[in-house]
Image (cartoon, rainbow, N blue to C red):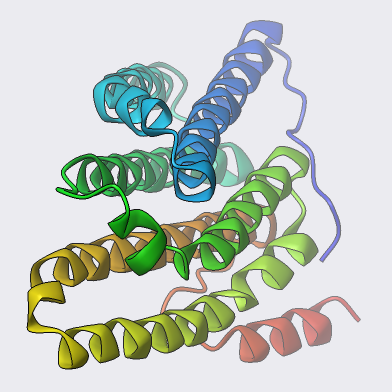
Amino acid sequence: MSTSRIPHHISQQFDNELEDIRSKVLAMGGLVENHLKKVLATLSDGDFENAEYVAVNDFQVNSLEVEIDSDCTDILLRRQPAAGDLRLVLAVSKTITDLERIGDETEKIARLILQLSEPSALKTYYVGMLSMGNHVLQMLHRALDAFARMDSTAAFAVAREDREIDAETDVIMRNLITFMMEDPRAISPVLDAVLALRALERIGDHAHNICENVIYLVEGKDVRHVALEQVEEELRQRNR
């Protein structure tokens, strides 16, 4: 499971096109990562300007998705790529879908924060999400790094962290339920906090999906709905 690179072609223009879409994916990933950082900054210091910025700028993520998707379609039609090149285009197409959905979930968290009737509720009901949010952010960053380096070994390592995110979600969820049981007046803001928590969890799921795309790109192995340990063992046997 070693690092792979884009193969070189007789046509330098084709090489440039493949590198261009890969670079655009990383730019889109950087934008999504920055939006998530801003939302987490609001959770950390209560600066609602960061949340407002994310709420009104998600269109930038959507625009990049449309642009990259058009580039992929153009390459498929004109170049009719095969083997590794085809996997790259397909992995890019899947990855930008996950990035766009991460952008949507991040925007959702921003809007939930902005509609709080009492800013103090941010520290009461959302404070437990900051640690999990930073974990999800690091997971996304490392998934994008694995994509940039086409490193399937790193992708496997990041993908396994999805289980840790699920466990953190369960702990925070139990705390939020306790708030509602102890004070009926807390039900409405806590339900919003639950929606934000689920959005964070889904961001972790999409980071996991990006890792699966990297594994598919590098190893030619579709690992969806298959235990990662099983796939790793199969690849070890294959590479002996």
